[in-house]
Amino acid sequence: MSQILEYARLLDEAAFNAKAVGQIDPQGELSLSDAYAVQSASIQRRVERGERRIGVKMGFTSRAKMIQMGIDDVIWGRLSDQMQYEEGSSVPFERFVHPRVEPELAFVLKKPLSGNVTAVEALAAVEAIAPALEIIDSRYDDFKFSLSDVIADNASSSGFVIGAWNDPQQDFSNLGLTLNIDGRTVQVGSTAAILGHPLRSLVAAARLSAAAGEPLQAGWVVMAGGATSAEWIKPGQYVSIEMERLGVAGFHVKG
Ligand code: OOG
Ligand code: MG
Image 1 (cartoon, rainbow, N blue to C red):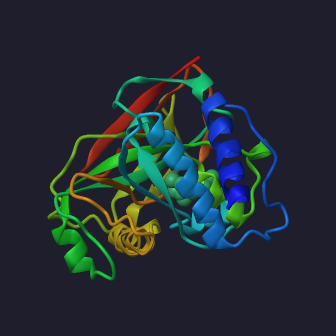
Image 2 (cartoon, rainbow, N blue to C red):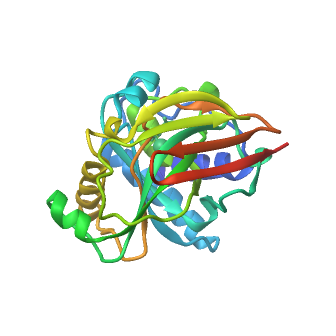
């Protein structure tokens, strides 16, 4: 237990100070349940500092992300209000170690959603969907980690931006999208890259968070996972996602 709290302190301080640390589990020996216990303890430290839990993010839900990071298990992480930046705002670069951005789809729930649910049940709990950008930032040197490392590090959660909310009663299984930096398209993809349909990511989020004793709440956000590989971001850039039918979302990186 004390080892888990010690890892949680190390990773939380690394995030708080935007200073990388060495991997805690380079050999892949830490169990996944211990890794999630580290994640839970590290988010607890944030809550004790006054941050509020506002949802969940899913990771490695697309082949592109699995291949980029060399991990092929779906993971999840905990989102706090402090990680959310207003659409169109300036995000301070110094808050991060070595941030990357990826295009995602976000859900907001109108009802709690818990356990083994069908896609139809999951959709019935969705208030709205939106194009979104996730800023991921590994707290490990060189953005290198094992599966347990990245789970313990809250699935690299560090920031996210959500565009205008849209009606979920439409087909969002295969919406084209682009990730753009300074007006240049750097990634092209589709929401279909997210487990074949982003709703499957919500179904998985409902199951995993309930199993951890923290069922999805009404009002919570669920980030479905990157649809393409992630791109490095640098001070001075303007980063945006454009999603077919759902619209755009963006932010400035303040140097
Ligand atoms: C881990 C987080 C993965 C996604 O959308 O697949 C993730 C990482 O790549 O650092 O957020
Ligand atoms: Mg992501």
